[in-house]
Image (tube, rainbow, N blue to C red; front, side, top):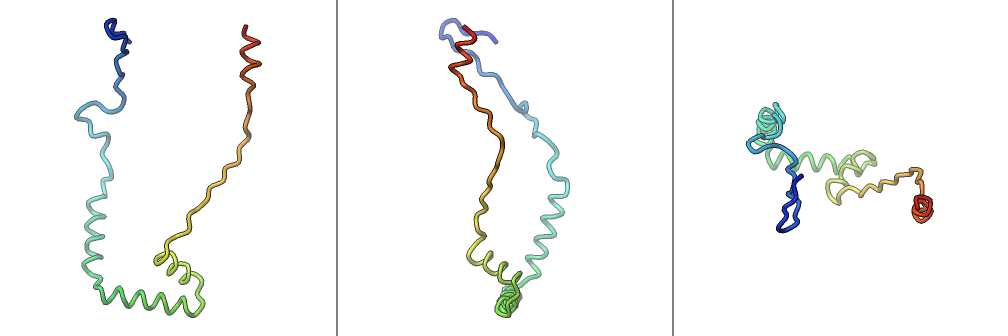
Length: 102
């Protein structure tokens, strides 16, 4: 890389796609899936949705655990998952390494 002598600024290197390159073809089925989703939304009426919700509630009230979970997840929201990662960690003594190098 060249350095600009007057300002001592190194020019920024360009990363990523060149201008005009969209980056890839994307999902070739996205349009078809969007049409299918739209047809489902058109087919289900608010009354249908209420019947489904009442059926889910009725199942939950009978003790159906899956229905209870689904009802809680859809009304209250899912519980946040906690991710615990255990990995060996190697600690370095930086001061020792610099003394050895001298």
